[in-house]
Length: 278
Image (cartoon, rainbow, N blue to C red; front, side, top):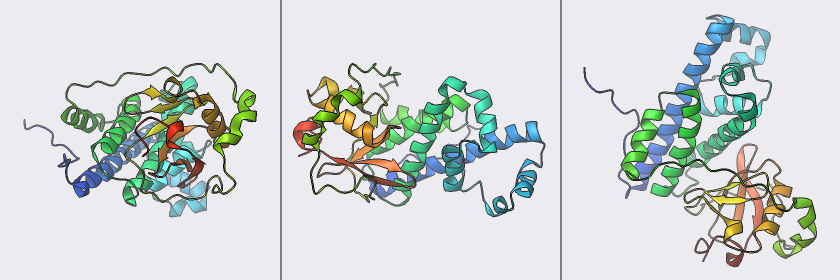
């Protein structure tokens, strides 16, 4: 029996167009597997005609194509009461629901960037995307974990993914509010205003305790600079749910708001990860 072919082509890591195609292809493959997982679960609990029944209950849903990656991800990540969450929530422990659906929201944000060419397509960006999708896919045992594993092994054959425990906050954000002025400017853009990129080849996570983590190395900003606690308090005050962060070359930090990446704060090189800003 012949080997099952990869559904995502391994790109030449020196060719941005191929990297972009691999990123978009991986997202589409993930969503196809996710829909198949939901369809199987809904068919078992609600019958093979579950989608017809759903459309009959809400006439608007008759116009919805859940095989569309953007539509499906928005439905599941944004709508807490969506019936399509049922197969997922029956498998994922309740204590992990928030983290899981936040990661789906991150994938939705990544899709926006990759599809609209608002990210510099390089090996680090692709690796970060693969790791994110792999975490979600592994939890649901989606077939796309195979593509993720092969891509990761091909890009970094000697590396393994190590789970990271989020540290407990030593100081609550409310105790740091008085110090936030040094990180703000009168001419700053409004929080949430769209940022189209391009973004630098770095990706970060803002944890709900205000810690800021560089995803590629798992370094915490608080371990590198003294002002990290104050900056983290500012960011989490503006984006209480935390989540994925990106940054432009001139120091504009972006978070995902609704359907697009938006302004969160402006940071100077001395207040950020060393070497990430010129």
